[in-house]
Length: 298
Ligand SMILES: NC(=O)c1ccc[n+]([C@@H]2O[C@H](COP(=O)([O-])OP(=O)(O)OC[C@H]3O[C@@H](n4cnc5c(N)ncnc54)[C@H](OP(=O)(O)O)[C@@H]3O)[C@@H](O)[C@H]2O)c1
Image 1 (tube, rainbow, N blue to C red):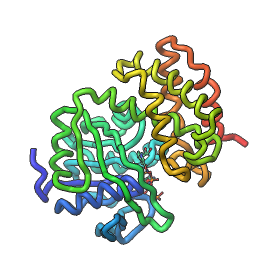
Image 2: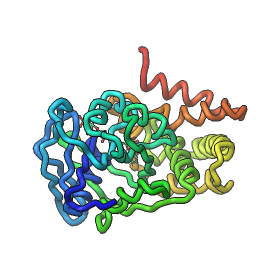
Image 3: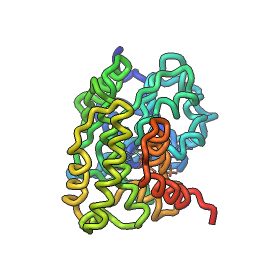
């Protein structure tokens, strides 16, 4: 495999995560085709050193694509995958690699049916970033992805080599993805309270978070994730050490009245718990509340 500049790369969903990846690809000499919903002439990423402009335009009509991709980054929210599926069907051919930049542990099962001839690889996205309403994306931290250590992942590694985005290949991707899932699950509490990470300094919320994370950890273990018993406390410590106004994408969606990724971030733990016969009394309360906050009615 090679990812010279002739490698045909597309980014579906040029929002917060998609813009960071598009900028990294552009820095490496690629000109990714940008497939979105909102027409923009270019994408703009702001980091500590200034602005990076990725030339567009953002294409908004899949019917105007007459081109096959070697590598596709899918960075729409999980709640938007179905609506974005036409992009996958026009871009993918047999052997196209689709790298899914979404939270959760079910990327292959959920995205695969929309591109049955492509090879879908999941990624753990470790960096937080947020898009403004004018499309500007501000980046302050390090950009890092973890992918499973399999041959298809090497195309992603090579495409992003030498860029701001480091890519780790993990021989135990399952554990890495469950580690991130637990972090996301706890952040779901912020969407329920509509509070930022300062809320974790409350002793009652800290106790609830730890109890919830221990419940999630039992399900992770049943799924085969190798995570130590210290993980719940480590996740809580991280929230407590964060700036008190730190947000999370599920809270941003709640504040904007958008559908929430509750099923891939919290619902999955309830579902897998039931499948393994593990009691999940806290999920039993949290998940319906998140689902109703997201999907209504009322
Ligand atoms: N943001 C983070 O810090 C972060 C961190 C780790 C993981 N993640 C995960 O990464 C994934 C992407 O999140 P994000 O925060 O980057 O979301 P986002 O900023 O909302 O970006 C989603 C992008 O997809 C576009 N889109 C929506 N429907 C589409 C369609 N039918 N066709 C093409 N494009 C479409 C949106 O267009 P519009 O501009 O029109 O809305 C937007 O540009 C999620 O699974 C999230 O959980 C996010």
